[in-house]
Image 1 (cartoon, rainbow, N blue to C red):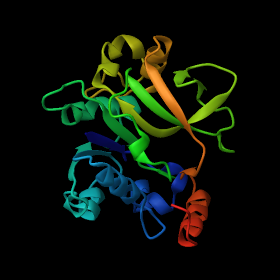
Image 2 (cartoon, rainbow, N blue to C red; image 1 turned 180 degrees about the vertical axis):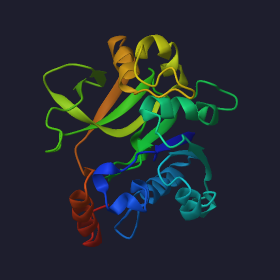
Image 3 (spheres, rainbow, N blue to C red; image 1 turned 90 degrees about the vertical axis):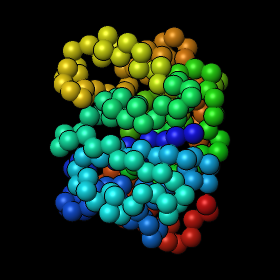
Image 4 (cartoon, one colour; image 1 turned 60 degrees about the horizontal axis):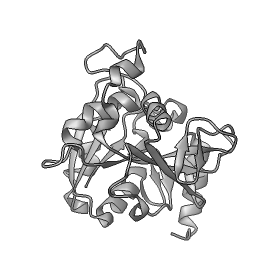
Length: 241
């Protein structure tokens, strides 16, 4: 199985920490955020990981090498000086994520700026639909949530909304007809295109093609220096991992 780590963000809310260091390379608990993901993916048996980059892109191969330290094969997908958003970034990385013998084989995708104790082994290797999302309870900075979970089905609307954790499993066919779905979104006509993933997910949800689960334990969206510092203190004090 292959995986994608989103690491192309500009880290604007994290400045000045990200003036010289891309957010996924900021350390918590003694190692970069992205390394926590790489270790989990390696233990799961993932073989290839694509890291999409933009801001300070040259720092990633310097810090991570070729992935052999984790018995992984790392590939870096540079998006240029302007990130391609989640949809464009995933679409741009698809050639490296498709299975050699199974072009619609599912792959894992993770936001590079989160930390969680979620066990990646719980992710389905062969989801029935086009995507499987891990949802969490709404944090203070995002009280309205993103999607509703009814049983194991994710819906775009509903009363009991949860927040998307940034962890999911996807099939390449999610992008079938993507241009019609995103319409005239700014950047969609560029090469490579820039667009958000959410419209594609919402269409798949409408067709009953997105499953999900709720993770009720530890999860942090490291979006501010204060949240980074709080997480670092907690991890260094000895979290229950």
